[in-house]
Amino acid sequence: MASGRYRLFFRSILLLATLTACAYGVLAQFGNHLNFDTFAQLAYQRYGARAQQTAEQWRDLLNASRDSPETEKIRKINDFINRHVMYKEDSEIWGQSDYWATPLETMGRGAGDCEDFAIAKYFSLLLAGIPADRLRITYVKARIGGHYSKVSIAHMVLGYYPGPNDEPLILDNLLADIRPAPQRPDLTPVFGFNSEGLWLGSAPGGTSSGSSTARLSRWRDLISRMKADGFE
Image (tube, one colour):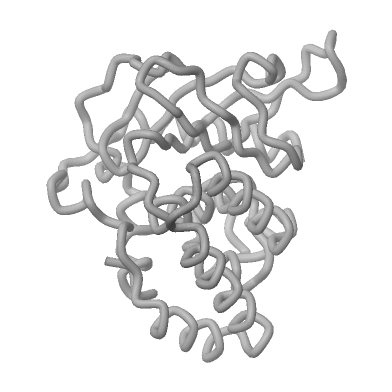
């Protein structure tokens, strides 16, 4: 697993160096709306009754969470995705070394890797009403094997920023609970992105690269497939 994660890490760094041109404004607001009827129907058509039931439970959770405090939204959605998705490598699920699954694909298969967990949580929280500027999908180096270990793997988490100058809370498939970043010394941020930009490092008010994350080829492909899943 570690070797696969290292390949993931180096591919991600390569993506930063190979950003390609693409319209920014169109995607800045993407992911805030979803045709739930289409989503549930597609879940049934592609993956069967169990997937449809998961999609409907997810829809009910999002609808019930709209008026809840943001900290409650992130807790419930983090728990839901962690509970309904089993960790598996892309090679096992999709027969590919690196594939970014849509939320429908992740919940439909009931499996995903760290990227798929983070993506599903990100778009779930957008639909629950949390602004994109409070969320960042973040690539990190995760130290494994204990406090003094020097072994790291590439990993992806979702960061939630309560305020522009606050440390993020970390939503992670490796841990059930959500912890502030200072309580995750095992994670070293490399870069983070959302629908509005890309940042190097971890500072909440950090420097944007000035490039839309829509320029990432895998992000663009993900967005295209999500539109076919009912996202707007």
